[in-house]
Image (cartoon, rainbow, N blue to C red):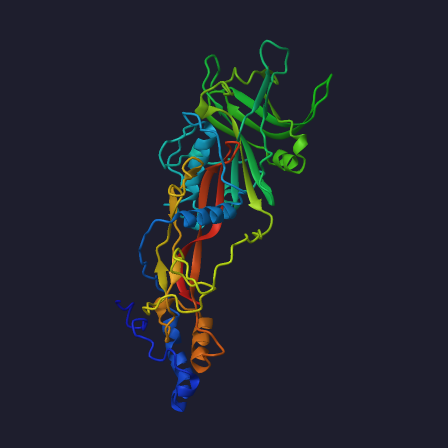
Length: 448
């Protein structure tokens, strides 16, 4: 193996490996602290580890174990079995796919950077390019866009299930009602933001410079012989000639429905002119359930874990201690304290690719098709060079291990930096969920 640099000594074999403290001359024991101080400036340098690639197919038993583990990480009790999605895809999955590409850069979520390419409004591109209309546009009294998206652990979209309206054939005021089923809300998470999105088309006979006031209310209580009790959620003033998606903040309603699911009676939308004249939602071009699938109204909600989840351990069948399992990955095992790599290779990052397609999940995982998880493996030789990305604690521990090998273990090869991934999938109710999982991809390895 080539050296990482002049200061990197990871290419040298550890000549002192396996020696006990009694075999070291007294003069060497006195020089060890001096050598430690000499190499500290070199150890502080950071370097990327070389990735060793080697792929193989999982066996049937390995595949089942991998499926159980990933489902547990996703917080799913079992594999979702959604109904086959209709073609062409509706507006909610298209929005979520755009949001996924906005949160991910080549499958990595470093910094959760939001990329905006183009000022177009009201278009859902079929490629990975994300335009302005695909991103949430929350009102001013909610957290800024960057904060909402970057801090969200889960994003869920909900299709409109019930649509009622009072139109031109009935007495004013005209209104339109929408209802969303939020019962599959994730447990242990709080709503940070939610919005109702509806598309407005251009209509004939409308003055383009006319201002329309569109208000969205939560229906809190229905009355048999009089109007229901309404609470204003959001209001926007838009030109009559505007075309594109309109987003209304419905965060307070989502929180209310999360605490009291039975109180979910939906939302009601009103349209008025500046002269307080009531207008029909369809007459001004607001698209409902009968419109094109790519422009149907939907709701999107952002969640954040209220506390760090504690995933309960799954029951694992005990394996015989003396029998080595053939399907074990070449990583250190808690049941085997012998060195994981007998070839004396230094600590570095190795390739480990998880394919959702090979796991048989193409029908419910929308994106990605898989991801490179990587893993760390190798020896932490003394002296620890900069290419081993060692911490100061590992440096001290390695020196003490040379002095007292029976009492202090060697430094271990482990991830020093991890990054998240986002997974876009259907649930059993065909709701599209975007879930971000932290610490899923190894970025760098080092001796700890």
